Image (cartoon, rainbow, N blue to C red):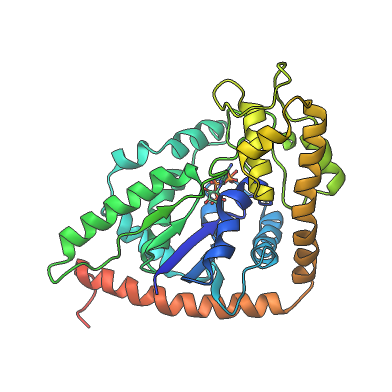
Length: 333
Ligand code: AQP
């Protein structure tokens, strides 16, 4: 059975962008793959976080993973900082990665520009090697992520090839992973600035729909989503980014194709379209929110996370030792 690894940062409450681009596919994949899903809290601290909010968001994200339908009997669900091999592995990755490669990452450029005032941490630059470690430690074959992670996945593949070439005298040590993108909604855009990616840490709360937003808030945010003045519902991301983004969200939330939505709303105004989309998103999120609250109140959530961390530690330590041995660290065992 092939292995899957993917993670989400608890840097805020996940948005429908995180859900559509990543979480939704996790549920479909859990039956056919050996899945590791992680709350990547060590990634979240590359930019300043409020300690108590972070702690709440970590457990909350784990609860959301279960609320969207992940089955703890099928997947390994764990918190990154409870598995030390990730940061240790990241050091081995950094020693085989070039600064130029990291400086080229668009996410580094974007996030360092956003955080310039408060200072850019060194970890913002070395974030991708930590992500590489996350993936290779489990010998993941597939990594289901949104489009924004494409470049990091390419870096991971380059690293694996380099590592195997440098140290794999007796055959490859690490598995070469592949990214897996969704067809519809791999890049959900901000509702307020539809040329920017929807992000959970956006300072403008009108830009995103959080998975825990109240129904009234969801409807309001969609109603005030930026569109254009033409009044025609058609899919044209370049000239009509706002409406096209809403169409993609609609399609991803309901399973109806964009073409069929465009045909259905021909001659109808943005008002009706947005009202229906609001109902579709509320219909999707309400049952998830109910399950989320039940998981948050349950001790079983912590038992699942303890069991997940234990399994993840066993698997990742094995790979870490293989990497250390290959690089000549420590004493031969
Ligand atoms: N707008 C998006 N559309 C589609 N997929 C998205 N993802 C994120 N935003 C979108 C996917 O969600 C997964 C988890 O992302 P992450 O939390 O690890 O980091 P991120 O990509 O930086 O997400 P955010 O929401 O933008 O977080 P912040 O604001 O903290 O930077 C990934 O698979 C990602 O592709």
